[in-house]
Image (cartoon, rainbow, N blue to C red; front, top):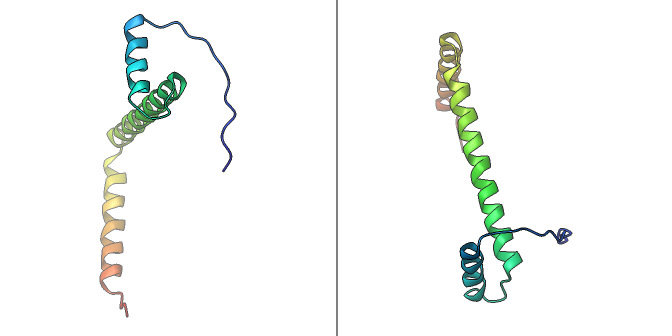
Length: 89
């Protein structure tokens, strides 16, 4: 796997945040400001994606009709019965 091409950007942040970034970089071997910021951004992006998935899942089931729920229950019952009848060596 090859490393992703990096693009240089410039941002303006508060001094207290920069001090926090510098603190984290100082206490991790080989870490730079850029690596700390990139790690934090990736973590935040993953968290936002997980929140969006949870929101979408809740919305999906909130709109789920009674007929669809019954259909799922029926399929679940059939699947369970078929699984129980399997003979596994």
